[in-house]
Length: 334
Ligand SMILES: Nc1ncnc2c1ncn2[C@@H]1O[C@H](COP(=O)(O)OP(=O)(O)OP(=O)(O)O)[C@@H](O)[C@H]1O
Image (tube, rainbow, N blue to C red; front, side, top):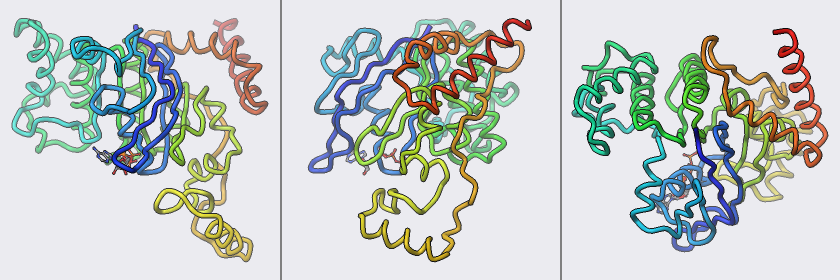
């Protein structure tokens, strides 16, 4: 089962550049969460902080009871073993074939025999649909296959926390849809806590249980998916709809004068090429493939959110109640 990751008051600066301040949120056990945010808002820095590769100056990151900003190197080493990380480019070793790439963490961190290694590697290769490609080099396969190989490698140590840094980058929409399904299927099978960093709106709308967004050096919000998907915060609406009109500019953030000038141009009928439709709103979450175990994270979340209900904004509450009603009806029918 996955573990809880509780982040409190986290602040990171590089020299005089503040990346983000006072970031506080908890990744619930075994649930899938996603972090959105314009380019350069420090999402990758955040992921690296979680695995102890970057050290924020203030705050705490408590993973299964250990604050990794206070613990010893030995404790950090133990905590790191709980993580599986899918890096943007798969981060495969170019000179090793896929089999050796996927086997690498097992040979490095365990004393398993080669036959045990083989059994695990082949099981994970099958899980990500790469059986038969074991002897290929990373340079000989497509970007989508490299991602899946990276995912297989991130799973061999049975992670309790799976971090995925822009899993959709470089993939076409169809391959992204397959990968989204795969992430939820993996969550159903191993009940790990998942954090995805993504720009992909479709993935953000259909995969996670919880959604957060970094903007202007702060976490704008983090909570059940329904909260962000029904939010009327201008930055959320602009991001989800991929519009130019709004507070996010080319270099992250616009000043008031630019926003006013753009709004006046739009009023005057100038089209900035943004789509007319508003994609905000809650659409169904992807379900595990039939035959997969029930997602324990989903069951836990249903109880957790039920208890949060009174503190949520009305549109989110309505969306959650609709989902609960549908779920209860489906339970009675089966
Ligand atoms: N090791 C480092 N030293 C100094 N600055 C860094 C370092 N790592 C990242 N940064 C800076 O931190 C900021 C945030 O970078 P980061 O890659 O985390 O953004 P991001 O939100 O993941 O962006 P994208 O969506 O484009 O991948 C950038 O300005 C980057 O230059």
